[in-house]
Image (cartoon, rainbow, N blue to C red; front, side, top):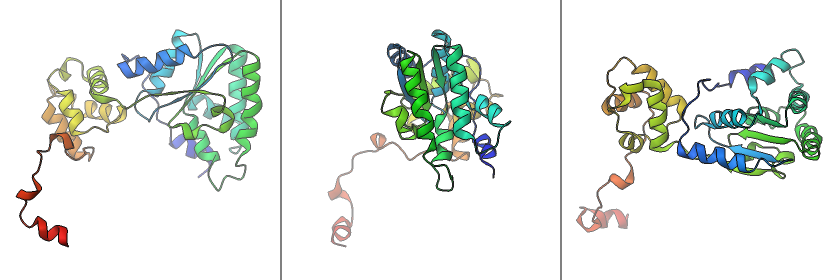
Length: 260
């Protein structure tokens, strides 16, 4: 598969509609905002589907920034040779820096995930390409924010200069915000604390898919949500906090087990 096609196949675009921020997302937004001094470089890490793009979009809106995603990268790469990854990235960021003092680059890990692979013949070139870009932005008092799935995906040319901000998992509040946005009043019967205990590792994509599948119910119940998640194999084991304590002495044959 060509590099451009591989990048494109990995894209997951966040919905463009404005969502209410959860408290953890609002804290991340505020942490980024506090760090936006002239010459700032920020790496914002969050797992896919937890609201990284939503937070970056809100920061761009509130601080007159320019947000670049993989759509902009792919549009530029499509008119070049597929291997021109580093040059294309630098060009779109440089063009954005000419137009704005604040540039936010989302999903950088999709690019570094390609350039870090063993088969990629220009491995390491991205560090050389980003070094003057980042240094020049700092010298010009510009501000750069890079969104990644994990800090390890940020090249050293960025990370060693950056302030790090991390977004946690969704939690029950995040489940509630996403489901209420997708179902409206039909989500009123869902017990989100219970749902989170039952399936604590869901991301925004999982929840939006569940809402779309159950949108015909009025209202959607917790049991309907659970049933859908079980069919989709999105549940986890019972939370240990909900398991009754066990007296080892009461277990028959435990001495034989220990001896074995």
